[in-house]
Amino acid sequence: MTDRQPAIVLVRPQLGENIGKAARAMLNFGLTDLRLVAPRDGWPNPSAGPAAAGADIVLERARVYDTLADAVADCAHVYATTVRKRGVTKPVVDAEQAARAIHAEPGRSAYVFGPERSGLETDDVALARTILTVPINPEFGSLNLAQAVILCAYEWSKQQALVQPTIEELLPPAPQDELEGMIVQLETMLEPCGYFRPASRAAATRRTLRTMLTKPGWNHLEVRTMRGVLSALAKGPRKPD
Image (cartoon, rainbow, N blue to C red; front, side, top):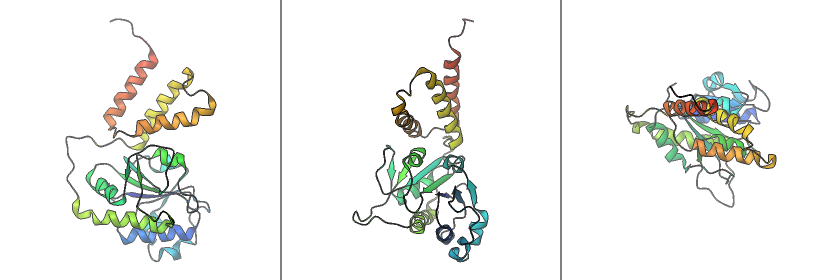
């Protein structure tokens, strides 16, 4: 497994058969990093194996997480797959553009897919850096989970010959857990100031703040610098030397 290989993250998948079919789709195009977030029927699931049709290595390596944030903590580029408009403002790309970016940019990436029946929730999309969508029949926008996975995996595999050398002068984007730490620190400082009042608007205000902070490609040095700024502000004025 290399950093260039994106993770496939299935959020709250409902059926073991669909997990198996997604694993089959992955291995067809060389992907093996499968991550499951709170699968409805637990894991391992006996129904996944037959549906995987031989993609056992993907199922054996699959990792289970309680939350999406945990599943993508090591990822610098997180793509939320959705065909519906959401209450968040993010850059929007198609599958080919996402594949090109994954190959060209340093850092681990993840494609995030929602549960079969409802797709990703707004808070799931808000956690991502970018929205990935595809042109689809407006009168019948109904891709199943394995179809959505294979579409992304196929586009990724097409770009393998287009791998570009990393530009060494640029620091890689910060992984999700570092960015999350900065956001939590800022929210903690803002809470006693009443920034998230009234309570009826708190969730929307937090989402807007998170959207704003996840738009730039913060590298780890920038995140560390910003956290230093926040820590200095929290300490208050210093006495002159």
